[in-house]
Length: 301
Image (tube, rainbow, N blue to C red; front, side):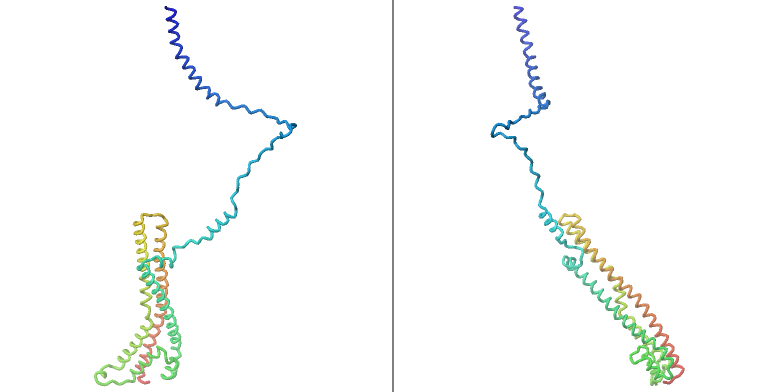
């Protein structure tokens, strides 16, 4: 009874151990086989003496196909030949701008055209007066008033000053006009002729002063309007990329550049022409003073 019991107990205790060892062996055997490198297959020699059996020729792998250069060249030419529209131009701004932007641009074009016209006409008129001014020395070198007037020329502005002084010196007034002295009437007439020359010299100068002072602000208004429109568009679309921002803002800044380009020539012309006007008017004023004193002392034509 005891031997049988012990034997049966030993069997019950050894059976799980055998099962565990068998399971571990089954697990590690595939891993050991994978870790070992497979032996190289032995070279098989082909007996070429047997008819129909020949050593197979080694096969070569075909090189990868290269892309056709013609297609690449066509693609590069297409990219190089593609024209990209430049948004930073006046034409593009005119086409894409609204009525306010176009109106601002038209105003600046009108101001620039007026500046060119005034500058050209004033330069010609000042040249004419300067040539007439050069004949004043011949007036004082003449022997008589008639000869002196002929030296000035028929259309000379300085001749009008001399003729006005001579006419008042030789005139006789009746009634209330007789109470005004001849010298006062002569001074008044000379002053009238000087004012006519001054008006002639100042013609167009107000335009240059106005353009030079307001053109930058007109351009700035166009810039502010363009930036507001660009920001409004970005806010509505929700796209704040550099393409959306740079184009409209760049177009708006062009308006400021145009305003400065219009204002700078106007300011330069105003200063240059104003300097020449002062020289001519001072010479006319001195000439009028001398003629007035001449006729006051002579009292005859």
